[in-house]
Length: 410
Image 1 (cartoon, rainbow, N blue to C red):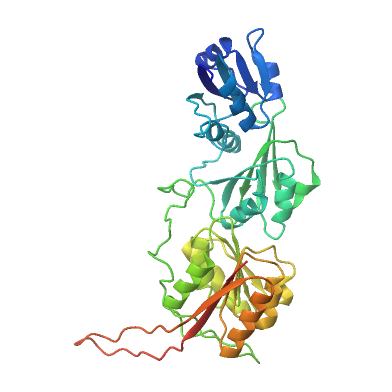
Image 2 (tube, rainbow, N blue to C red; image 1 turned 90 degrees about the horizontal axis):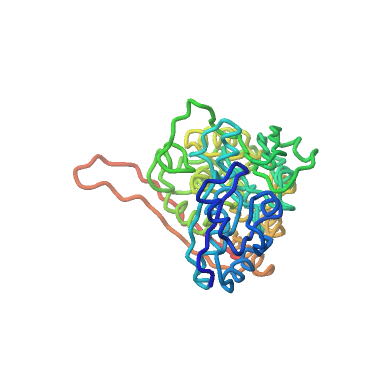
């Protein structure tokens, strides 16, 4: 094993005395091609291209001498340190970081970033990164080949965002470009880069700082708990349709738990009604599309989302026709019949929750889910508020019908 292992972060600026001293005594240096070419290395040092970090780690383990790994920016932030510190390698590291690429990108944009989300598209993270951009007004995206600014903008084509694209940060070829998301695919971009995705919520220097990095000032919102608001009596029916009764809070809590929507997910809430479930899912960090055939319901959802400080995109239209052009969902909540359910299952979400109204609808939903390979479970839930205590004024308590809740996992 190497006698000493130093990990140096480099942002293109002159190295610190400690970093250069580590390079001067190195017998093995791993880094990118430009780093190996531009940094001052001792003569005769073994050089290794930093492609697979795991291969570099195994070579360092076998090396007898002093090893240095050079990475971009802060190697402890979405960087090589995590892999090098895996227990199977047994390496003890000295880390000398530079300014991270995310910090540099926000500095170039002149923006604070303690309220920003940071995501990476490496691996299979592009769609999840796009969903985080849907759900948050300020996101830094660390891109990868094949998952860069153009691909990200195409996934966000149904929403309006501003992209700040930072190419080759810290190098002589550094370039900063600001474009609206619809114009980003018209250009070719160099890899790697950092993309700041801005918009969809309150921004500006007058927005006060929060207490938790990556979260707004009032996180997790003005209310404690989930499904806390009492359900309204109902939503007015459109001509020729049945009236819709909103779910009691205990049922909404179960539905939220079974949906399990989380950051990186996209939820379709079909027949969203007053939008209470949509807002709670957005508070949990998911991106949400609230679909409803009633324009007034969509307007109420917009107001509720703003009041809770979350981003919920409303889609006015009737399912299943309106679903065809929507981005791929991870989780789906269905209230509107077998035809809508089958259309949703054709998009293969990871989890589906269904709220049938009758036993016949329960059996139809179970068959539809099982036929396409979903594991199905469900419950019949009856929730009623408590009667008033002795001496308290009488309250009116209408009977609440039991509610069927089915869920299926792909």
